[in-house]
Image 1 (cartoon, rainbow, N blue to C red):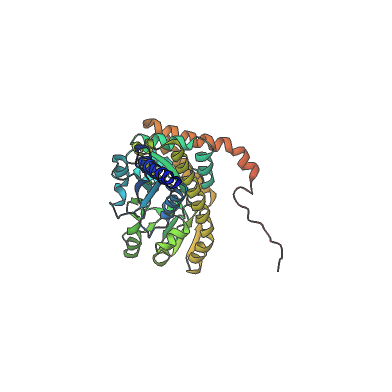
Image 2 (image 1 turned 90 degrees about the vertical axis):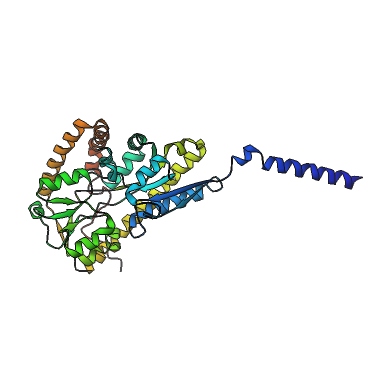
Length: 364
């Protein structure tokens, strides 16, 4: 009798378990699958921000969301990823905002800006201030959500085969340089901005198609072979004191997620940011030395050069702000942050994000 009761109970339990497992409520909890691509091919070190984001999402959102990542150029040409995410062809893609300045000038402020925010400025303005809201508003105009996944150190500066020690040395040069405002500045200085993808720079320098180029951080530039095709390095990188990496997510896809999943994806982006910025900064030690060991000559502009560049930047900033309210909103927010932070920055010196002591203790 007991055996019959046990078998009957077990059968009922199995029936209920099967019904529960196949119910619509449970089916809705199946793992979401996203495709994500990037503007960056594997050969460009900036793809590490995308790798870090995908790794963090797949760990934090395990059992709920899984991202399959396709490196730049595998699903579509790199510069088509903006429209692909906007239209929902893919759910997400990694980018650098300035590439889209032709769609709206505001993007020229969100990836980098000449004489603008430093890496730590961007970090604080985005996560501590109102920066993240401006990114969401800018990308929201095109049907996308945006999360920052990394900030680079200062862009290296101009690499060339003739020494650049002053702005006058740039006159007549053909320079590969990204950014809409950067192009206006080069024109002011008598140089020509040449647009080309990162993958094309090495050959263009090697063949003399361009006279000089900039791209990104020391590890990135070294990995792209610039130590083999240039002799001189002009610093600091006034054209891009920092660069922001991020991920575009289709807005309808984002809105379909529950609040918990959205929060975890935001946390994943922040985790990626920490991994990326610390890795990029630590790598400056090794890769700057590699350029020095290769015999690259480093020339530093004096302060008067930077003062002159700042005046030119301000003139272009004022002009663009007249025609684009969102550009004005973004750059005004950034400049207000710099003004508000100026008191502490001056008090913090010389310990503001680094201190080079005049001597070290003898520990040997």
